[in-house]
Amino acid sequence: MKTRVRDGALRAVGITLAAALCALGGAAGTASAADDNTPPSAAALNLIDPNAMGSITIHKFEYPDTLPDVPADGMEHTVDGLTPLAKVTFTVEKVDGYDLTTNKGWTDLAGLDVDAAKGKVTGTPLAVTTNDEGIAKASGLAVGLYLVTETGYPAGATPVEPFLITVPLTNPDVRNTWVYDVHVYPKNPITTAKKTVEDQKAVKLGDTVTWTILGDIPDAGSIDGYRVVDNLDGRLTYSGAAVTLTNDATLAASDYTISHDPTTNIVTVTFTDTGLKVLDANSKAQVKVVITSSANAVGEIPNTALIYPNAASFGIDSGKEGGPTTTPPSRPSSAT
Image (cartoon, rainbow, N blue to C red; front, side, top):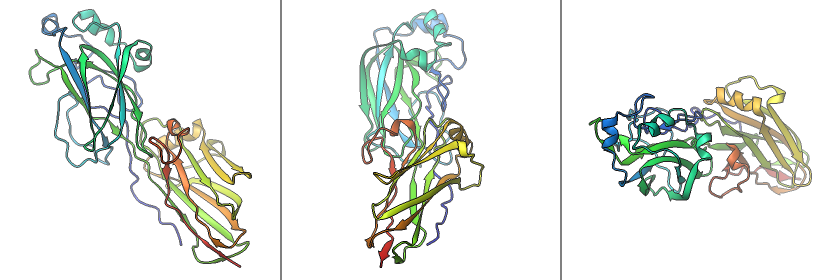
Protein backbone atom coordinates (compact mmCIF):
# COMPACT_ATOMS: atom_id res chain seq x y z
CA MET A 1 0.00 0.00 0.00
CA LYS A 2 1.49 3.28 -1.10
CA THR A 3 1.65 6.10 1.39
CA ARG A 4 -0.41 9.19 0.64
CA VAL A 5 1.18 12.34 1.98
CA ARG A 6 -1.30 14.24 4.12
CA ASP A 7 -1.80 17.86 3.10
CA GLY A 8 -1.62 20.68 5.61
CA ALA A 9 0.32 19.64 8.68
CA LEU A 10 -0.89 21.18 11.93
CA ARG A 11 1.40 24.08 12.64
CA ALA A 12 1.92 26.40 15.56
CA VAL A 13 4.14 28.85 17.33
CA GLY A 14 4.20 29.83 20.97
CA ILE A 15 2.31 33.11 21.08
CA THR A 16 0.96 34.85 24.13
CA LEU A 17 -1.68 37.50 23.56
CA ALA A 18 -0.89 39.70 26.50
CA ALA A 19 0.47 43.11 25.50
CA ALA A 20 2.73 44.89 23.07
CA LEU A 21 5.98 43.74 24.64
CA CYS A 22 4.91 40.12 24.98
CA ALA A 23 7.24 37.30 23.90
CA LEU A 24 6.42 36.04 20.41
CA GLY A 25 7.72 32.66 19.25
CA GLY A 26 11.28 32.15 20.44
CA ALA A 27 11.91 35.82 21.19
CA ALA A 28 12.08 36.63 24.87
CA GLY A 29 10.17 39.73 25.93
CA THR A 30 8.13 41.37 28.64
CA ALA A 31 4.38 41.73 28.64
CA SER A 32 3.86 45.15 30.17
CA ALA A 33 1.17 47.76 30.40
CA ALA A 34 2.85 50.08 27.91
CA ASP A 35 2.37 49.98 24.15
CA ASP A 36 5.95 51.16 23.70
CA ASN A 37 9.10 51.23 25.82
CA THR A 38 8.08 54.28 27.81
CA PRO A 39 7.02 53.77 31.42
CA PRO A 40 3.56 54.81 32.63
CA SER A 41 3.11 58.42 33.69
CA ALA A 42 3.46 59.39 37.32
CA ALA A 43 -0.28 60.03 37.46
CA ALA A 44 -1.01 56.54 36.21
CA LEU A 45 1.41 55.01 38.70
CA ASN A 46 -0.42 56.73 41.52
CA LEU A 47 -3.51 54.73 40.56
CA ILE A 48 -1.84 51.38 41.17
CA ASP A 49 -2.93 49.88 44.47
CA PRO A 50 0.22 48.28 45.93
CA ASN A 51 -1.94 46.11 48.18
CA ALA A 52 -4.21 44.80 45.43
CA MET A 53 -4.27 41.12 44.49
CA GLY A 54 -4.60 40.09 40.87
CA SER A 55 -4.64 37.01 38.68
CA ILE A 56 -3.36 35.58 35.41
CA THR A 57 -5.88 33.49 33.47
CA ILE A 58 -4.37 31.28 30.77
CA HIS A 59 -6.52 30.22 27.82
CA LYS A 60 -4.77 27.30 26.12
CA PHE A 61 -5.48 26.18 22.56
CA GLU A 62 -3.98 24.25 19.71
CA TYR A 63 -2.45 26.62 17.20
CA PRO A 64 -4.74 26.96 14.15
CA ASP A 65 -3.84 27.33 10.49
CA THR A 66 -5.31 30.83 10.63
CA LEU A 67 -4.95 33.03 13.70
CA PRO A 68 -8.14 34.65 15.01
CA ASP A 69 -8.20 38.42 15.26
CA VAL A 70 -7.78 38.73 19.02
CA PRO A 71 -6.28 41.95 20.48
CA ALA A 72 -3.08 41.40 22.46
CA ASP A 73 -4.15 43.55 25.36
CA GLY A 74 -4.49 41.25 28.37
CA MET A 75 -8.28 41.41 28.39
CA GLU A 76 -10.71 38.49 28.18
CA HIS A 77 -11.96 37.85 24.65
CA THR A 78 -14.29 35.41 22.94
CA VAL A 79 -12.26 33.07 20.74
CA ASP A 80 -14.22 30.82 18.42
CA GLY A 81 -13.10 27.87 16.35
CA LEU A 82 -10.02 26.85 18.35
CA THR A 83 -9.41 23.51 20.04
CA PRO A 84 -8.79 23.86 23.80
CA LEU A 85 -5.95 21.91 25.40
CA ALA A 86 -6.65 20.29 28.78
CA LYS A 87 -4.12 19.08 31.36
CA VAL A 88 -1.47 21.62 30.41
CA THR A 89 0.49 22.80 33.44
CA PHE A 90 2.03 26.24 33.90
CA THR A 91 4.30 27.50 36.64
CA VAL A 92 3.87 31.14 37.65
CA GLU A 93 6.79 32.78 39.52
CA LYS A 94 7.21 36.33 40.78
CA VAL A 95 10.29 38.18 39.53
CA ASP A 96 11.99 40.16 42.29
CA GLY A 97 13.31 43.72 42.05
CA TYR A 98 10.63 45.56 40.06
CA ASP A 99 8.41 47.96 41.98
CA LEU A 100 5.59 48.74 39.56
CA THR A 101 4.36 51.63 41.69
CA THR A 102 7.49 53.56 40.69
CA ASN A 103 8.66 55.00 37.40
CA LYS A 104 12.03 53.24 37.81
CA GLY A 105 10.38 49.85 38.16
CA TRP A 106 8.74 50.18 34.75
CA THR A 107 11.83 51.69 33.14
CA ASP A 108 13.95 48.73 34.25
CA LEU A 109 11.54 46.32 32.57
CA ALA A 110 12.37 47.67 29.12
CA GLY A 111 15.71 45.85 28.98
CA LEU A 112 14.67 42.64 30.72
CA ASP A 113 14.43 39.30 28.94
CA VAL A 114 13.27 35.88 30.09
CA ASP A 115 16.75 34.48 30.64
CA ALA A 116 17.68 37.34 32.96
CA ALA A 117 14.35 37.09 34.77
CA LYS A 118 14.90 33.40 35.56
CA GLY A 119 17.70 34.40 37.93
CA LYS A 120 15.47 36.80 39.81
CA VAL A 121 12.43 34.69 40.68
CA THR A 122 11.36 34.66 44.30
CA GLY A 123 8.89 32.89 46.55
CA THR A 124 7.10 29.60 46.01
CA PRO A 125 6.19 28.78 42.39
CA LEU A 126 2.47 28.48 41.73
CA ALA A 127 1.45 25.60 39.44
CA VAL A 128 -1.90 25.68 37.60
CA THR A 129 -3.36 23.16 35.14
CA THR A 130 -5.87 23.80 32.36
CA ASN A 131 -9.34 22.29 32.58
CA ASP A 132 -11.33 20.72 29.74
CA GLU A 133 -11.99 24.19 28.35
CA GLY A 134 -8.25 24.88 28.24
CA ILE A 135 -8.41 27.42 31.08
CA ALA A 136 -6.10 27.72 34.10
CA LYS A 137 -6.14 30.60 36.59
CA ALA A 138 -3.35 31.70 38.90
CA SER A 139 -5.03 33.74 41.62
CA GLY A 140 -3.88 35.74 44.64
CA LEU A 141 -1.01 37.43 42.81
CA ALA A 142 0.51 40.54 44.32
CA VAL A 143 1.36 43.52 42.13
CA GLY A 144 4.53 42.77 40.23
CA LEU A 145 6.25 41.05 37.33
CA TYR A 146 5.70 37.31 36.71
CA LEU A 147 7.50 34.62 34.75
CA VAL A 148 5.13 32.04 33.26
CA THR A 149 6.57 28.71 32.12
CA GLU A 150 4.77 25.80 30.49
CA THR A 151 5.97 22.77 32.44
CA GLY A 152 3.55 19.99 31.44
CA TYR A 153 1.92 19.50 28.06
CA PRO A 154 0.22 16.84 25.93
CA ALA A 155 2.05 14.26 23.87
CA GLY A 156 3.03 15.71 20.52
CA ALA A 157 2.80 19.31 21.72
CA THR A 158 5.66 21.78 21.63
CA PRO A 159 5.52 24.05 24.71
CA VAL A 160 5.37 27.81 24.23
CA GLU A 161 8.40 29.84 25.19
CA PRO A 162 8.37 31.14 28.80
CA PHE A 163 7.02 34.67 28.93
CA LEU A 164 6.90 37.65 31.27
CA ILE A 165 3.77 39.53 32.21
CA THR A 166 2.88 42.22 34.72
CA VAL A 167 0.02 42.43 37.17
CA PRO A 168 -1.58 44.87 36.55
CA LEU A 169 -1.77 45.86 32.86
CA THR A 170 -3.11 49.12 31.49
CA ASN A 171 -6.81 48.99 30.67
CA PRO A 172 -6.86 49.31 26.84
CA ASP A 173 -10.27 51.00 26.93
CA VAL A 174 -9.66 53.42 29.79
CA ARG A 175 -5.96 54.24 29.66
CA ASN A 176 -5.75 55.86 33.10
CA THR A 177 -7.00 52.72 34.86
CA TRP A 178 -5.46 49.31 35.48
CA VAL A 179 -6.56 45.68 34.96
CA TYR A 180 -5.48 43.34 37.76
CA ASP A 181 -7.06 40.21 36.31
CA VAL A 182 -5.00 39.55 33.19
CA HIS A 183 -5.81 37.08 30.38
CA VAL A 184 -3.29 35.45 28.04
CA TYR A 185 -3.80 33.10 25.08
CA PRO A 186 -0.71 30.94 24.42
CA LYS A 187 -0.99 28.27 21.71
CA ASN A 188 0.85 24.97 21.24
CA PRO A 189 2.24 23.40 18.12
CA ILE A 190 0.70 19.92 17.85
CA THR A 191 2.72 17.28 16.05
CA THR A 192 0.90 14.32 14.54
CA ALA A 193 2.49 11.22 13.08
CA LYS A 194 1.58 8.49 10.64
CA LYS A 195 3.23 5.18 9.76
CA THR A 196 2.48 2.88 6.88
CA VAL A 197 3.96 -0.31 5.49
CA GLU A 198 4.75 -0.41 1.77
CA ASP A 199 2.97 -3.72 1.15
CA GLN A 200 0.66 -5.25 3.77
CA LYS A 201 0.00 -8.48 1.95
CA ALA A 202 1.64 -11.69 3.12
CA VAL A 203 5.39 -11.75 2.58
CA LYS A 204 7.80 -14.64 2.49
CA LEU A 205 10.68 -15.06 4.90
CA GLY A 206 13.51 -12.86 3.77
CA ASP A 207 11.29 -10.52 1.74
CA THR A 208 11.90 -6.81 2.02
CA VAL A 209 9.41 -4.85 4.16
CA THR A 210 9.50 -1.05 3.86
CA TRP A 211 8.05 1.22 6.54
CA THR A 212 7.24 4.91 5.97
CA ILE A 213 6.97 7.31 8.91
CA LEU A 214 5.53 10.81 8.47
CA GLY A 215 5.89 13.38 11.23
CA ASP A 216 4.58 16.95 11.37
CA ILE A 217 7.08 19.76 11.83
CA PRO A 218 6.11 22.26 14.57
CA ASP A 219 5.87 25.83 13.32
CA ALA A 220 7.38 26.98 16.58
CA GLY A 221 9.71 29.72 15.44
CA SER A 222 12.75 27.85 16.69
CA ILE A 223 12.72 24.06 17.04
CA ASP A 224 15.14 22.91 19.73
CA GLY A 225 14.96 19.18 19.01
CA TYR A 226 13.37 16.61 16.69
CA ARG A 227 13.73 12.84 16.83
CA VAL A 228 12.08 9.81 15.21
CA VAL A 229 12.37 6.46 16.99
CA ASP A 230 11.24 3.13 15.55
CA ASN A 231 11.45 0.09 17.80
CA LEU A 232 11.47 -2.64 15.17
CA ASP A 233 9.94 -5.96 16.08
CA GLY A 234 12.46 -8.74 16.67
CA ARG A 235 11.04 -10.58 13.64
CA LEU A 236 12.39 -7.80 11.43
CA THR A 237 15.99 -7.44 10.35
CA TYR A 238 17.05 -3.83 9.83
CA SER A 239 18.56 -2.97 6.44
CA GLY A 240 18.73 0.83 6.28
CA ALA A 241 16.90 4.15 6.48
CA ALA A 242 16.47 7.29 4.41
CA VAL A 243 15.36 10.75 5.59
CA THR A 244 13.67 13.41 3.43
CA LEU A 245 11.07 16.18 3.64
CA THR A 246 7.77 15.80 1.82
CA ASN A 247 8.22 19.12 -0.02
CA ASP A 248 11.56 17.91 -1.43
CA ALA A 249 13.54 20.58 0.42
CA THR A 250 17.24 19.69 0.55
CA LEU A 251 18.55 17.83 3.58
CA ALA A 252 22.30 17.37 3.82
CA ALA A 253 23.81 14.25 5.35
CA SER A 254 25.05 16.43 8.21
CA ASP A 255 21.50 17.59 9.04
CA TYR A 256 20.61 14.38 10.86
CA THR A 257 22.03 11.17 12.25
CA ILE A 258 20.70 7.63 11.83
CA SER A 259 21.57 4.94 14.34
CA HIS A 260 20.50 1.33 14.82
CA ASP A 261 21.01 -0.60 18.04
CA PRO A 262 21.26 -4.30 17.11
CA THR A 263 20.56 -5.34 20.70
CA THR A 264 17.20 -3.57 20.97
CA ASN A 265 16.51 -3.27 17.22
CA ILE A 266 15.75 0.43 17.73
CA VAL A 267 16.28 2.83 14.84
CA THR A 268 16.79 6.48 15.83
CA VAL A 269 16.86 9.53 13.57
CA THR A 270 17.98 12.72 15.33
CA PHE A 271 18.20 16.11 13.64
CA THR A 272 21.35 18.15 14.24
CA ASP A 273 21.47 21.92 14.80
CA THR A 274 21.76 22.54 11.06
CA GLY A 275 18.91 20.13 10.38
CA LEU A 276 16.67 21.88 12.91
CA LYS A 277 17.16 25.11 10.97
CA VAL A 278 16.01 23.33 7.82
CA LEU A 279 12.92 22.12 9.70
CA ASP A 280 12.25 25.67 10.93
CA ALA A 281 12.27 26.86 7.32
CA ASN A 282 9.95 24.08 6.12
CA SER A 283 7.27 23.81 8.80
CA LYS A 284 4.48 23.21 6.28
CA ALA A 285 6.16 19.99 5.15
CA GLN A 286 6.57 16.71 7.05
CA VAL A 287 9.59 14.65 7.97
CA LYS A 288 9.60 11.39 6.02
CA VAL A 289 11.64 8.46 7.29
CA VAL A 290 11.67 5.30 5.19
CA ILE A 291 13.03 2.22 6.98
CA THR A 292 13.91 -0.90 5.05
CA SER A 293 13.80 -4.28 6.81
CA SER A 294 13.31 -7.95 6.03
CA ALA A 295 11.05 -10.53 7.65
CA ASN A 296 12.94 -13.22 9.54
CA ALA A 297 9.99 -15.02 11.19
CA VAL A 298 6.41 -16.07 10.56
CA GLY A 299 3.35 -14.20 11.86
CA GLU A 300 1.72 -10.80 12.07
CA ILE A 301 4.35 -8.21 12.94
CA PRO A 302 3.16 -4.98 14.60
CA ASN A 303 5.41 -1.95 14.33
CA THR A 304 5.00 1.49 15.89
CA ALA A 305 7.15 4.60 15.69
CA LEU A 306 7.52 7.59 18.01
CA ILE A 307 7.98 11.27 17.11
CA TYR A 308 9.76 13.51 19.61
CA PRO A 309 8.98 17.08 18.39
CA ASN A 310 11.13 19.01 20.88
CA ALA A 311 14.11 18.58 23.17
CA ALA A 312 11.93 18.51 26.28
CA SER A 313 10.19 15.34 25.09
CA PHE A 314 13.41 13.37 24.58
CA GLY A 315 13.55 12.19 28.17
CA ILE A 316 9.84 11.39 28.58
CA ASP A 317 8.41 7.93 28.07
CA SER A 318 5.69 7.32 25.51
CA GLY A 319 2.21 7.76 26.90
CA LYS A 320 3.27 10.18 29.61
CA GLU A 321 2.42 13.87 29.71
CA GLY A 322 4.70 15.77 27.37
CA GLY A 323 5.96 12.58 25.78
CA PRO A 324 6.35 11.70 22.11
CA THR A 325 3.65 11.27 19.51
CA THR A 326 2.93 7.62 18.78
CA THR A 327 2.04 6.38 15.32
CA PRO A 328 -0.74 3.85 14.90
CA PRO A 329 0.74 0.35 14.54
CA SER A 330 1.26 -1.15 11.09
CA ARG A 331 1.17 -4.92 10.67
CA PRO A 332 2.63 -6.77 7.72
CA SER A 333 2.19 -10.54 7.67
CA SER A 334 4.99 -13.00 7.20
CA ALA A 335 4.50 -16.49 5.78
CA THR A 336 6.81 -19.29 4.83
